[in-house]
Image (cartoon, rainbow, N blue to C red; front, side, top):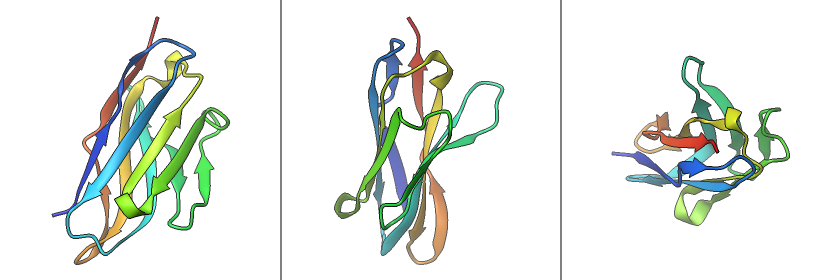
Length: 118
């Protein structure tokens, strides 16, 4: 059974920083792309940032230059460093990964709440 477990969310003031972590566990042969999505109340889930197994990244325009996605392949973990946070970054953040286990599928974490407020 493959699982993705996120951590690192919380309440932060505007202009502050947070780092999210997402660790994959279980019977994992390899992990392809890993990504962070977010969903604000009343809005659709959107892609925030993604990283390939080779380290290539892409970001949503709204977070470009403020957020950084990195991965540690040895630990099957992906991180999202979020700087200069704005109230509009408030959302539940979800980790997603394409994982080759006994089959290849896309897996989701349970989500972690990020609230940016003074």
